[in-house]
Image 1 (tube, rainbow, N blue to C red):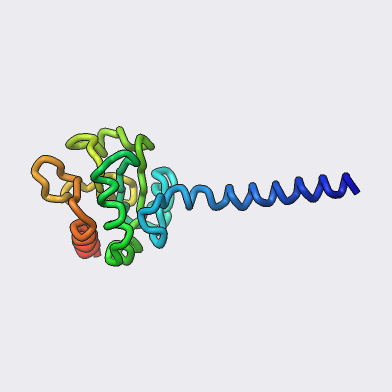
Image 2 (cartoon, one colour):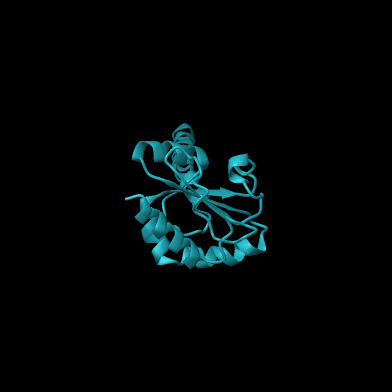
Length: 157
């Protein structure tokens, strides 16, 4: 009886661990930036973009950044972004994750939040930016990001 109970407990713990491991990446990558959007890590995003032949949108942010904290609920609730995200492989980069310090993603500094549009190989297209003279990839709100997403989609049809 004791042996059977021990085996049952081990089986249950193992099953729970497998389920949690399967969901961990997905839950971790979303980070509250709209759970309806299919978010990817950098590495997963590069693979998906290549397989799907879709452009990428990189969102760089930090958990300790005031501007990021203001943008997050605006972005998460924006239905236009949610719909337009289906045209992109959406990459969510938090804090110092790769590729935060990659020179191609710090063209005018490592400030946050910043948004880059990239082709299916992950190469940023610097012509798509916020129009901010000093911080080209800083967007003041979700509506501005949605507008740029829409423009990018129209330009690449």
